[in-house]
Amino acid sequence: MLAGFAGILAPSCKVSYSFTGANLSPEIKTFTVYYFPNRARLINPTLSQNFTEKMREKLTRQTSLNELSESGDLEFEGQITGYDFRPMSVQKEDVSAQTRLTITINVKYTNNKVPEDNFEKSFSAYEDFDSNESISSVEEELSIQIIDKLTEDIFNATIANW
Image 1: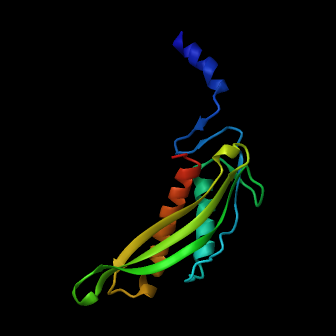
Image 2: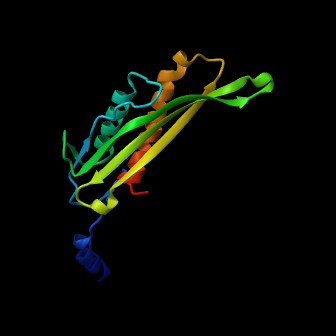
Image 3: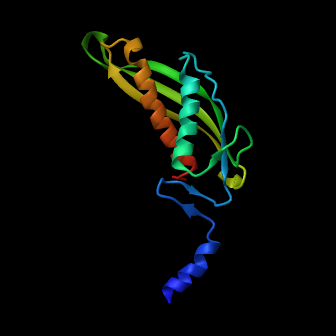
């Protein structure tokens, strides 16, 4: 008896669930990720392209949505606003033991099917590295790790609705 009752309720449900963590209305079929220009004081020449591609890849891999070049049901746009190296763990004689790379991205999320979900928000993530290592030797790997964190945070704030 309960199984029949559940079957009656399920088709009217407005939220669909998946094993990838996506929590979207069934009306949502497409997404668009616009290019995120780098407006930070320090410029990493590959950061904009790497972040934009990683965001597209995450949405493609973890949802069943189709990508459109513009005007998707979900739209992600914004800019990289921070790319900073800061000394951390200062030791005696004012020598830093570690340095922190922080990347900050401002995201404007537009849900054209559920406008009350729209927001504009800043996301930030960082990685620390030993100050004895040169920035040029660790920068690419750290940037990739930070981009992974940022795309996960943005995915969770938008698609997973956490």
